[in-house]
Length: 409
Ligand code: HEM
Image 1 (cartoon, protein in one colour):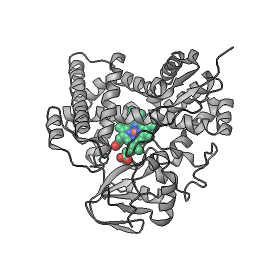
Image 2 (tube, protein in one colour; image 1 turned 180 degrees about the vertical axis):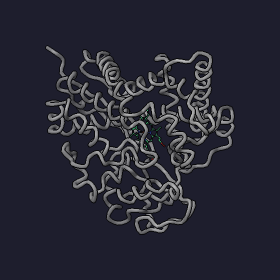
Image 3 (cartoon, rainbow, N blue to C red; image 1 turned 120 degrees about the vertical axis):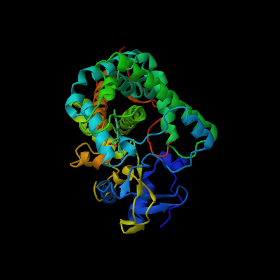
Image 4 (spheres, rainbow, N blue to C red; image 1 turned 45 degrees about the vertical axis):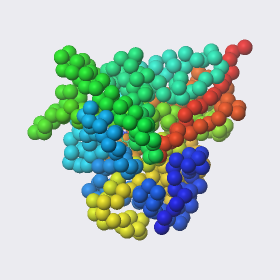
């Protein structure tokens, strides 16, 4: 069945994609979008079937909507290292090697060691605006928090954060459909600038090693396998920077809006942030998944959800729809802090490609919420302020989020 209305970039879908998800769950849980030449998989169970079978559902194109690369874009990319497949765009066994080389830095234990520093960063950001009584929260808090954390993990200076933000935004924009040719060229230019910047930093670490992730990546070895090439190192850095930033920014903004629009849940968080914040993060990830879906290609003809999909087809695993599947999450449109299976959501994907940064993202989300709930009394959405969604094919967040609170008399 074809669903011509499926267009994640339409104003209606950006505002509220969930009525369509509910309809296709009933009528066509796996459907074909002619407009994007994509098979869309929306049911929780069917998404898991694909995630468990990377030999049939390959990740080689997992971040590509399917548009052709223009010759002028290719020319710009040729000035860098190109787009080398690693991690999210690779399949086992190559994927297993990439993942093993980097996963140590993101284990729950290594991440927990960063808690104190992440709290300091969150508090310092709030110090910067607490006396103002109102703020645009994306720019002043939700973006700089994960960006500062990842810059410190990588070992790059704070002065370069704004450049990272531009590169990261442009690399993310490249992944969305329907960009003008000029914008595609500008975004490719950002990717090449990013590659040259990090290649120079890696050269510096080769001359003078430090205790940071750039040095670890340079020295990463698994016995019996080849060392990483420079192109592979840059591809992995790009994924960490991009995967870890806008996604976490969007989690924070989505969560704040979900809570401020639900006074009862917000009261529960404020009453006991130490204990309730973790549940709020899980439910926010489920209700408004920052990554609404990623892509796979079929290596053979296969039946999924009762639908025959040919070999070589492109699919979108719509995690955001799986997370609203009533068969898995009863009353899926309700924000429930006590949901028994809340953390079995698909916001971080699943299987071999399960988000490498999930522990870090959860910790940052929890600290962000606790800091806002305890430091800004009477926090609320600014009345009348527009809540504009990021116009992206598969990322869900807010471009701007204006909030206000009470200042001491
Ligand atoms: C709320 C925040 C985040 C969300 C919603 C998110 C979501 C995801 C999802 C859905 C995938 C699966 C990809 C697939 O199905 O192909 C993924 C993979 C990945 N994520 Fe995250 N992510 C977040 C934060 C982070 C952070 C903080 C980092 C790193 C610092 C990170 C690094 C990665 C990497 C490297 C992969 C690829 C893993 C692989 O292919 O083995 N993510 N993420």
